[in-house]
Image 1 (tube, rainbow, N blue to C red):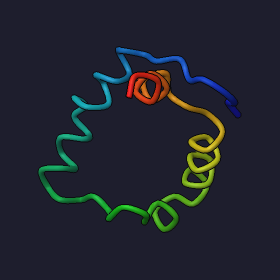
Image 2 (cartoon, rainbow, N blue to C red):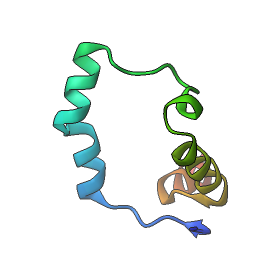
Image 3 (cartoon, one colour):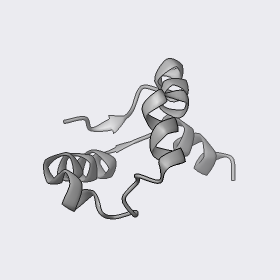
Length: 67
């Protein structure tokens, strides 16, 4: 499990927004509502919840710094 600052990856940021899987899911309306991760994949939802609480993004850190 990661603790502290996450390393940003430009290729992963772009890939997540331009993937074929995302395009198909958004166009066909196959997305579950926010907060339903526990129903679709509980193990992944638990991991993501812990990961997001124990680490932080460099971009969010800089945004708070320059407010």
